[in-house]
Image 1 (tube, one colour):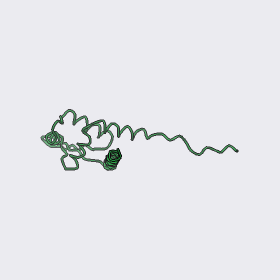
Image 2 (tube, rainbow, N blue to C red; image 1 turned 30 degrees about the vertical axis):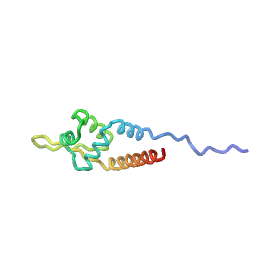
Image 3 (cartoon, rainbow, N blue to C red; image 1 turned 135 degrees about the vertical axis):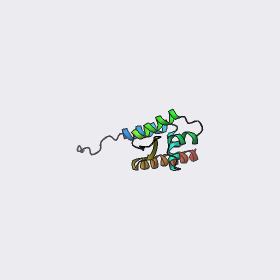
Image 4 (tube, rainbow, N blue to C red; image 1 turned 180 degrees about the vertical axis):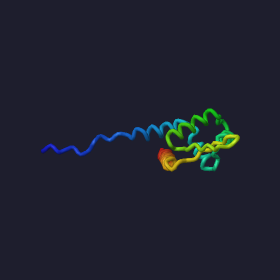
Length: 113
């Protein structure tokens, strides 16, 4: 048999996107924040008041991580008193759809067991 040229390379997990998913799922509040934004609750103070157990410190950390990943965008208004709102970026919309698909997959796995 002749040696054939290798045409495939070792396939590795997508490092950055896998880390993003792990970080977001690791933050137990991220999915709740997405739900709040989907319901037009986009100001941090309103988010804290809307969810029992959510603190300002934890929310700010969660929002910061999501902003760094490009999932959320922070919008500051030059007003007195200062006003800050968050919105989902176009990339964030695609990312959240992936998380929704993972949730559906989890439901299917539960049904199979």
